[in-house]
Amino acid sequence: MEQPEYSNLSIGDSIPSLTVGPIDRAQLALFAGASGDHNPIHLDDAAAREGGLPGTIVHGMLNMAFLGRLLTQWVPQQQIQRFSSRFVGMAFPGDEVTCSATVKSLEMPPGENRVVLDLSAQAQSGEVLLKGSATIVLFD
Image (cartoon, rainbow, N blue to C red; front, side, top):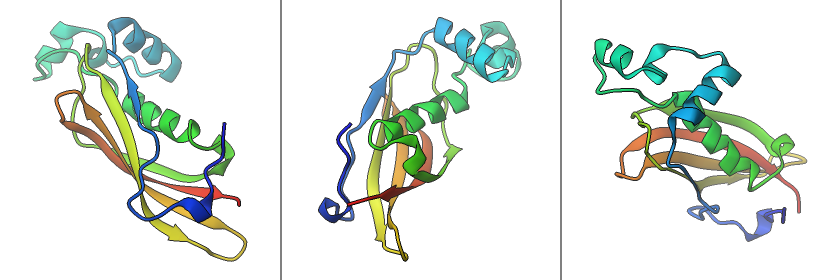
């Protein structure tokens, strides 16, 4: 992995995006097992409809995991100081999710070069699924 250089970054720059999917039901079942989140709204259409949803929905944390993968394809995990998101939309089986990040700010506290990123995950329809932020430490 080629390391991004702090001195080459500017506010508004984008990092390489990541598109995953289409998300299938096998992936939802595997994520449910790995995460321990066996809520039937993620696995059973009838249960999801009983809960007022149009059908099975993708785990919000699976979409957040895709954002995490976006970050770790840009820098090693140990360079991620902070990573957070909030869920603002729902993805469904068959959706493709595109994760993107733009440089919000560049900070230089003593001994560090920090890049603060605005994060977003969107379905192929353009609906925003997650919004978040991450703080990355870079070394030149």
